[in-house]
Length: 110
Image (tube, rainbow, N blue to C red; front, top):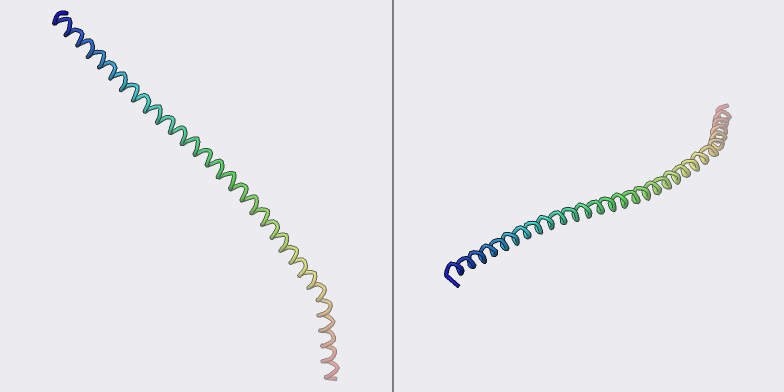
């Protein structure tokens, strides 16, 4: 093999090596870009899942609080009605008592 042939083979090998390195760099950049896209997609998917879970939990808690609120309001209305009924029953007693005391006061002055 002549010196020119050897140099040609060396240049060809260097050219192949450069092409291989360039291809590896391109593949590396493509892999990094794909990994970034995949990570962004995974983050968005997880964020959406977390948001849906949060909203579901909040809706359940709100429903629970609404139920508890309705129960407390019903309990309060029931207590208020009992107080009002008791007050109505006592009105007659108070009227009778006041009438009696008024009559007693008038009789005492006469």
